[in-house]
Image (cartoon, rainbow, N blue to C red; front, top):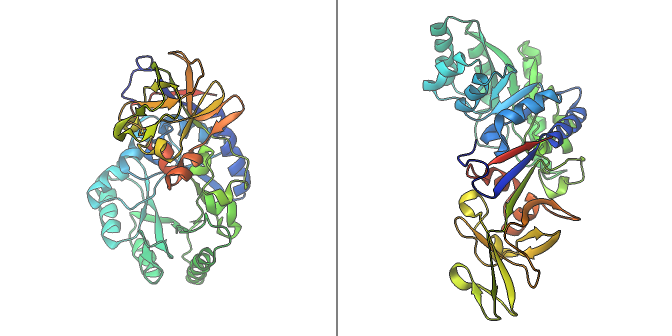
Length: 377
């Protein structure tokens, strides 16, 4: 999962699989009697899809979720046998690969239903389970509520397919108490009632993501799809105290270079960081090509050195960033924590996100493949 050979560069991401297992157990307990699906798309949000998948399944998850056919295929090729839900409808050209790798696709168009049925015929296998995705208000993908009953019938008419599940996605579950979530659940429940009357309700119903699991008990149904919470990151600040979760990923480096500069010196591209006193500037060999946002230092971002916070000095560059450690006698080779805990201090992905006006999801998924991952726990 990394293009960088460990040891050649003093930068690494530490992934605590013990913390991930603990988070999985906490979330699975919250979900019961619903089952838990661990979302491992985007290389498990930057944590490493295969080790995370194995740890989550070991700790109580019974399903995995991916975004791409290639992601599911890689898990199958590595020996994962658990059900893998393909969270977006595959392109018709990918139907053969879906069948070959025994992935469970969501569907929401007649074209995809037809392509998957034909792929099953060509493969000569048994019926392929599919889940119908219904758009109750997210307006990203999914059939409309009005189209759903017709598509249920379309699937039911194809002996090559079996309707195993029906699902939707909540748009504002990370805002507890929002009326829109209530409306989405009500719309979905009305559809489920229609399916009950028609005798076509499938065995698996699911709607809740991490936020929905924590804040919307009426949306738990039979299965919950947990992504960001699995990695110990709250879906939003409003949900930060809703479960005891442990951050799984931390980002580390070692000081590469040290220089003492006089007052008035200005640092990095654009010279926007000016010293108001003489200070020691240390260079850390990690930059925006690795996922540390270029503007982190310009919005007050900090790192930890010797258990203390120090500011990132100016713009982060592609491969390096600078830190103002004042008069601290830091030497090359000393440990620096960009994300994670050192001593009594901790810097979280949520802190970066808050400073940068984004969400923690973008921070952890942005830590790129040039950063080797080390697995502990």
